[in-house]
Image 1 (cartoon, one colour):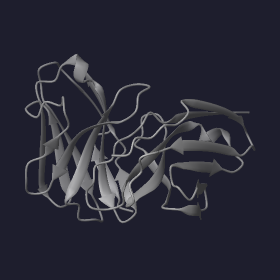
Image 2 (cartoon, rainbow over the protein chains, first blue to last red):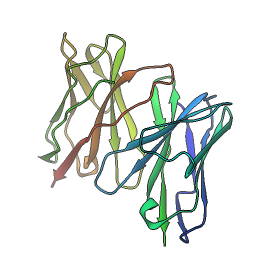
Image 3 (cartoon, rainbow over the protein chains, first blue to last red):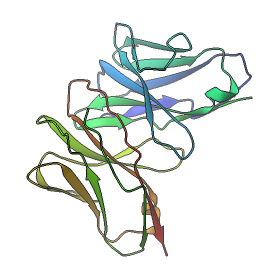
Length: 113
Length: 111
């Protein structure tokens, strides 16, 4: 499967600031990447599908202006949480479609204070 | 997208075999069944994938009946380190098709 690198692993930011999370496909050219959010004791919730060279497709209820996704190359997708608030504190995970299903990044723990 | 249903939690003891069954009644012809394992504060990790009958790898077996409306992940001789959440996913194997997670099964392995 694909090798996925996600950074940072954890970040603490002040309310009102923006945070960028990177997801890199190290050995696979990914035209599609996925971004998930996971709250404690809950399952992963798909936020959006990141498409290389075009606009991301957001799931219902996910604010595209708040969660900016850029997929400018076949190996990198970024998720920027803009004007973060404490309720945005969560575990964010990306995934890449590889040869045998989906490979997930190690996740980013975002804490907004 | 095929919806999946799994038990919320299961308990086991070290050395036992654990079987987790997932129901996916509306699985499509081209869908594959994939199981993932997730530890706290980590991304899900691929365990095994199958389309029909039985698949076995070094860590698990996957049993899929002929109608493919359910699947069973079998973990032989579990250890404490197998305590995790296990997710069953049903989706097309390729094509950028989005993957929707169900609630997963929280497995507790006791000493």
